[in-house]
Image (cartoon, rainbow, N blue to C red):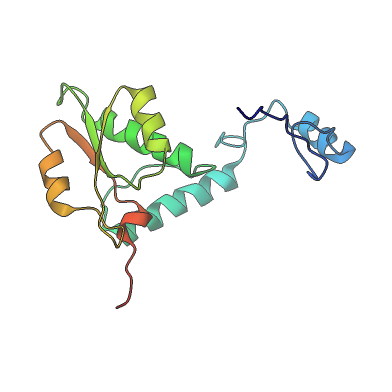
Length: 157
C-alpha cells in the first residue's frame, strides 16, 4: 500500500499557504466591508451586469431574461439549477434535472445541495447527448435540461 505524501508548495507563487503581498493585504483591508455585488455601492458594475444579461437574452431569444454574472462555472451551474427549481416551485412535487453524462461535476453538487434529482443520460462517440435518452428521462417534474459544451461538440468528418 502506497502512503500519502503531504503536498509541498515550493514552486507555488501564491496560495492560501503563503503571506499575501503587503499591497494586496492593504487593498483587502480597505475593501473588506464592501460587497462588489452590491449595486448601490458599485453602480457601474451593476449596469455592466445588466447589459450582459440583456445581451445574452437577446442572443438566445429570451423576451425577459434574468440572471447575474458569476465568478465561475460551478456557481453558474448551481444557480441555474436553483433558478429552474424555484421557477417551478409549487408546480412539481419531485424536481429533476436532465444532463449528459459529460456534465460538469457541479451539477452533482447542485442536485445534492438543492434536493433535486439529477438524471444523467449517455453520450455518443462524438460526445453528444443521446436525444432518445433525453426524451425518456424528461417528465412533468423536469425543471431543466442541461446542454453542456462537451455534449454539443461538433467534429468534422
